[in-house]
Image (cartoon, rainbow, N blue to C red; front, side, top):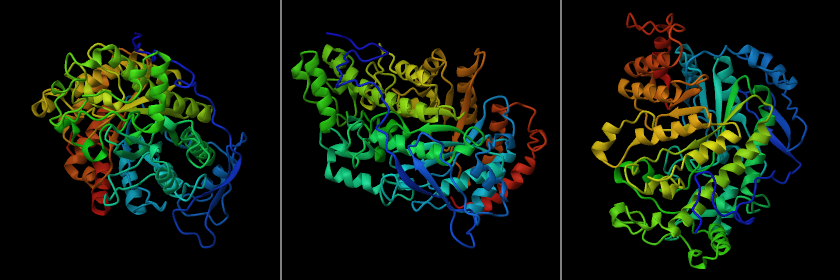
Length: 558
């Protein structure tokens, strides 16, 4: 019986492990709309981009798109493709800090929410020494009206606003659902036309052994199949990225410095093993998760791979005895210490399951690298911080999410190697969490142990690291934990590359005490002496940045 190696799955029949290839190219004229920050006196600004063309898209601005904030400069630079990088402040040393914008910064109809409040917030962030903002770009907003009909309007306004305030932008292309349902104030579903295809073919959505469907993200089992009105999901993601590149080309490398590509639920390279409704508290309830391999496309792949090695009895689904109502791995046949996870069958199934996830990541990385090659932007992908069974032998919640990481196998090194091959940064959350706190609620949890393993994998593969916080914790202890974990990654490296995304901007951030803690943290992560003029902590006054923060807190309604 072959045993899966840490780097690649053992089995490799052509129908099970197809190599990444360029998607079928569609040549189609698509309409891309921008809405200016202030309503124009005549017709709205439009940009017309030729989708998937090998030539540069030459967007054009309406002559009416001139406003007092940008004057004619932005119009000229976009129209003629002039780089904006020379107008941006120089990169500082240390570890830059970015702030993630509210999930609904752009509404479901493509409008910027609370423009004045956001502009005031941007000025405060810039005064505090923040490097830039993370802007989630939702598939369900941009391509909501139909296949290949893109509306970048609100996102264009945010990029222009960041430029005026001297902030950089990380664009997180989000191909997943946001929120738990229509009652959620941050609800952003997949595009309606995608959901209609899911209604016609429910197997486009993930399914567990109980037949429960999950529509957070299109099943990776149909990655290269034309299930989305003649296009495969990978083709749809690639078309979206190309149009983004062509529309925002003048900003790339100067203002937009990174593209983070969503690869699964919550943008993370994983299966939706734990429903989004439970995920927030999964570490407390110790959710084992469910294997997401029961849609017909995943089952067809499993069937083919089992037959390839002559084990037809392994072809009909996931492991039996892999769940328990009490969420206790020792009460399951598969996950207990001496369970079948460590048997030849377990090695086959987990190798196939994690291999499919790696293949999905490889396809997206390959497309992304090709599309953004030569644009001088960084690219990144995200890995989930699933730490609540890290202290067990089998790490069940990691296994159901697709990470073949156990007490005798490193499941994160293959992911780091893949990101390294394509020049991707690796992003992960939970940098503020401490074992001492977590173990009081769950003795099996170890966020620090998990992060150390992931950080070592990234270091070994020379992959730059991006940290995030999992909760909007603003106390000094949490910030100091981020600093410690960043040093664990960076210490000893000749060219350390660590940055941090604070999640996320809201009214609470700009309250005085929180703002003092946050700006102190930014100063620690950056070079020491740069911001003394505006952040004079010696005297206790945070100066200009704090005055802006107070103003922000008064008007911010996020």
